[in-house]
Image (cartoon, rainbow, N blue to C red; front, side):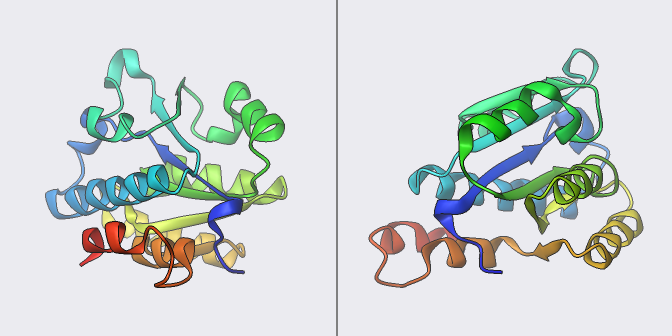
Length: 181
């Protein structure tokens, strides 16, 4: 399965400073940077950009630098975004896209449960491993293995970007490619 811009939307899960602060710095920074680069590319390519915040009353809002790219955001308490009725309804009724690019935290909790539920519901979740993170990398790696075993695509941010473009002759290539060098 190829990742197609016209079939994609991106869902950034729970990128909140209180959650991110518990993740080791290297993994945290990589997840933030790759999520931001994908969101920026998605904005330029007019790909819908969604975000969630887990219990924002206690964990705070979505990072402003990431939220600024998003077309919709949702506050939730459920771990699987698919089980949040307003988000699920938006996906089912208005997007017309079936590839859900997933970034965020934590890989082994909300990202994992969201991907499994989307897959079970007939969607094509694509988990961007280098735009996701967990407090313990062993937990993240276990989740990524489980996702692969369930038949869910796991990839990296740069692959998503280049599949979205598909061709160096794409009109956005020259303006967007420098962010990936």
